[in-house]
Image (cartoon, rainbow, N blue to C red):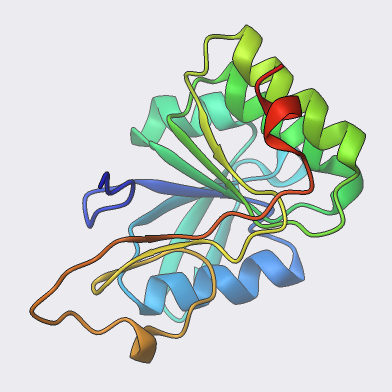
Length: 172
């Protein structure tokens, strides 16, 4: 089994400055996730304080990758902006995009999956409408409570994906 997230993963959060993004970024940081930045074009250059941890905000996914070496994005933008956020991540060639946003139109989902394929599938997409990914301690992505993922004798990785797009559409 492939483990997509490790303690070395460098994570950016698209939508980090919104209410859901802030809430879950705080949880991810508390669980040891290496959050290296957020993305919001209107708030580029600012920082967000999460209980004493200052996280920079970049104007684009590409800028965040260039400045931090990010290799994972977690997407918390509102559903009407999700397609654009995922396309931006694909264009920046980030290796992993975890799309948390719920209620994304099926047409938008099919569109960004097809776009990823046309661009060579350089970005692995998990979601949309997924609860995220976990690797038992010390890594967490999104909102899974850490108490449920204690490391033990078996160190499984768990991938959760739920999308409203049939497999035959994803392959298009």
